[in-house]
Length: 341
Image 1 (tube, rainbow, N blue to C red):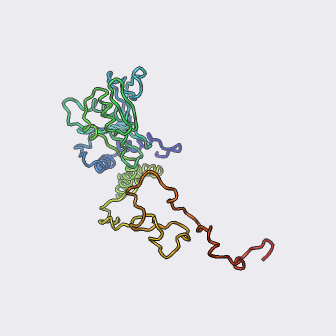
Image 2 (cartoon, one colour):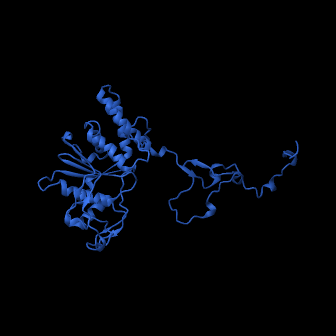
Image 3 (cartoon, rainbow, N blue to C red):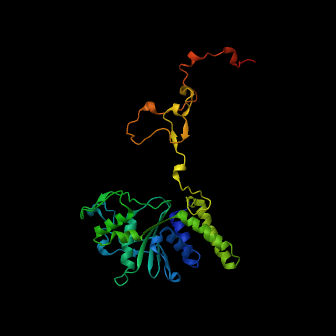
């Protein structure tokens, strides 16, 4: 079921994970998935009250309002060349009574801010009614990054409104400015609160943890679920989707250093005499690295570097004046003859 000899696409990943989530009991994948998001975004308070009534849709189709159709293009496309866009199709929509997650799944490091913008404003239009202001819409970006993407990397100016987007603008700022181009009055705080991110590497770790729980039970139902999850876990392993190990202060296996000044600094000595005063430095064949506070102080460093001050790696010392102080005894040099001993 989960073997894809032609390669695993983002649609394969989406179908496999959220398809299982749709049909398995909520305590198998949905609730652990929500707990994972909550652990990554503790300030969001993501605790839907009734998970049993959750509605999970894969690639649902939503009709774009008539007044937005020409504006649902990349903002750097001139108005006269814009084409009407009639529908948007998010990868996944998970809807509860009080929350809606609109998921954009990518099997890459890329981020498409325009897609996130379109899905967000459509989500507000579709799922938040005038009498339902407490309902929250979350944009959830799922890709292969190991860190939360920040910049939109887009530079453009809308000629009609004069609003400019900079490559350094965050994803939230991009959505906010694009909403202003549509005439939508949405606060940047609301948009920032709604923007969530998770990695497929997190999903791989989640699959391992859930499989460990189900695999430890001997009843037939748990064993059946384990067979499904084993296929998905194999897919995650094949793709290498497992998070890198990061430092955690609460990990008993980590060494916590309270005084950072006790950590030796790796610096290059600026003067050999500071370290080896009794040895002629011209006979030291390589630069010495020493873990101490001696050496180069770069406090007032300027942009120009004197090439003569850069240490050079040599297998042998400088032999230019060596024969003046020493001579070589020929009889001490062993020679291998071609024809004999």
